[in-house]
Length: 190
Image (cartoon, rainbow, N blue to C red; front, side, top):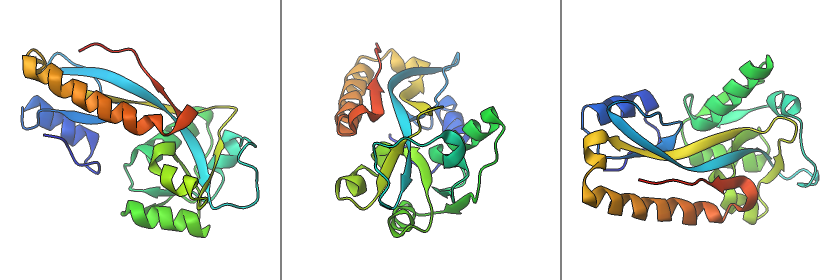
């Protein structure tokens, strides 16, 4: 079973340990004596805003990105956690920090210029392709997060699990290949 995006990672981890879920695909998954994890890709986060005439080739400093009027889709979203971790690591505050519960509303607010965000490129790739949202690299202190797949250890030994993982890996890599240089495939073995 695959999981819904908006569940807290600790909840998903507990469900894996109890064998209530077979697999979880997500960011920052950690292996343990009961959970097998492989990292598939590394996402590079970008600064997203409404097109404002600023060249997308012009990088932005992390400090400036953190001081913009930030909007996130969910209080525990991977984007919010990545921005919060970057702010803590550099001892800078997050400005604004508004949260919405709908990813569609979040994209709409970005398109309208109501706020900005620090996000994986894939979350807004279609809007960027249509020219509705502009992105800039965070050049001085880039933010990366790994996406992986996890399952209970005993399930990892099943022959069919390897076949399932191959299909998921193919889907993840195909989806991210459209994001250009904003991701990097990792070497992995099941």
